[in-house]
Length: 521
Image (cartoon, rainbow, N blue to C red; front, side, top):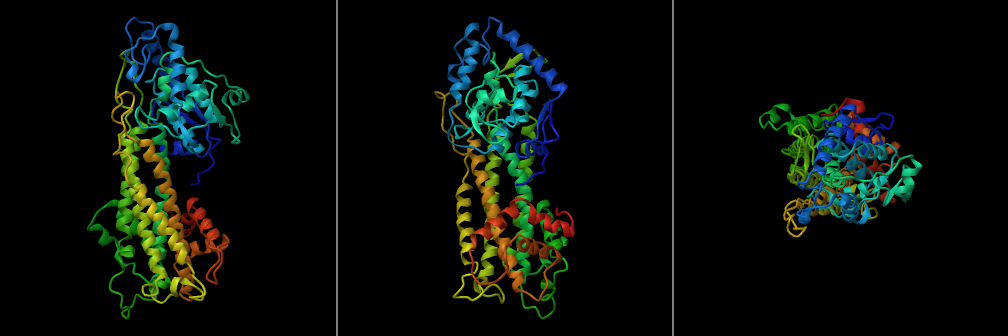
C-alpha cells in the first residue's frame, strides 16, 4: 500500500510508544529514526542496574546464566560476552525466502522502541547502532521460517542482532546484498561487542508479528473504504436500491462500523442517474440480494474488528516486551512471560477471517453482473458478442480462486502450539505464522476488490446513456485514463486486472472518489 515519502522527517523514539503511523513511515516510507534524550537517560539508568547484577555473586537470569532450558547454568564473568554472541548466532536459524524489507524495518523499529523504554538493560551505543541501521537503510536478511511467536520472534530478531555484531548478510539502501560488516563500514557505523544481557534483550520480543499487524491495519482501513466504493458501484450497476442504507435503518442496529459503511454507500451513490432511473412507482424490484443489501453489515463488522485489532496493537506498542525486564526504579531484574504473542496472534487470525469474508461478498456481487438471469438487462458475462466473446467470465474465476485461498488462510494459526526448548517453552503463540498468512490475505482481498471495481465499471459503461453518480464516474474515468479499456471485443485481460489491482493497492481508486465527494468515513 502506498504511503507518503517521510524520509526527510525523522521518527523520534522515546520511552513512550511509537504510533501506527510511525511504524508505517519507517517500515514503508524509509523514514530515519532518532532516540530522544529521555530515552538515552532511561537506557543509561537501566544499564547501571544490569552491570550491578552482572558483578554480583548471585546468578541472574539472562545476565549471568544460560537461557531457556539451560537457565540453571551459572556463566563465569569471562564467558559472558561469548554467551551473548553464541545466543545470537545460534538463534539466527531462520530458513526459507527473505521476508519483505518493510517487515524487517518494522520489527527493527519496534525492538528499538522497547529498548528505549529503559526496561531491557542494553547500552546506549547498542540502541544507537540499531537506530543507525534504520536511518542508513541497512536491512538485515530475515528468513520466512523460524519464529514460534514465543519467546517472541526469536529467529527473525536474531538475524537483526547478528547484523549489529557485523555478521550475517544485509541489503543496503539500494537493495544490494552484502556482508553486514561491509555495509556498516560503508555507512561509517561500528559493530558492537555485545555485553551482559544485550543479546537476549535484542531478540526477545513480539516485534515482527506486531509490525505486520500494524501494516495490515493500515491497509485494511483503506481497503474497507475501497470495498464500500466497489459495493456502491455494484449496487448501481445492478439497478439496486440505496434506500436500505438510510441512517434511520442503521440506527436501530447501532454497530458503529455498519453505520459508517452505509453512510459511505449513500454518499457514493448520491446523484446517480442509474439509481434514479428505477426509483419510481413502476419499479418491480422488491429486495436486492444479500450481497448488495447487506454490504454495510459485512463491511461494518469488518471495520469494527479492525478497530479492535488496532486497540490491541496500541497496547502492544505501549509495552516493553523482554525477559527478563529491568525495573530500574527498584534496581532489580525480573523474569516474566510478556514475550508470549497470544494477544497479537489472536487478532492477526481474526483479521484473516475479516479479509476472507469481505472478499467473499465482493466476489458474490461480481458474479451477479455476469449472469444474464440476475444482471437486469446486461449481456451475459458483460461480453461484447456473447458466445464469440467471454467478457469477464474468467475474471470471476480468478476471484473465486483467491476467495477459496483466503478461506484456507482464515484457519487460525494461534490455536496451534508445538513445544520447544526441551519442554521449557511448552506453549507458543504462532503469531509470526498468523502474521505471514495475514499478509497474503490482505493481498488477496486487494485483488478481489480490484476485479469487482473493474467489472462494475464495465457494467456502468454498458448502462449508458444512464449516467452513474459523480463519485463512481470518477472511478470509471480513472480506469480508462490508466489504460484500462471499456466494453468491447475480448482482449488480454490479465494486464487490466493487474492495473486495477495497483490502483486499489495504491489508494488511487479511493482517492478518485474522495476528490469528488470528500473523505469517506
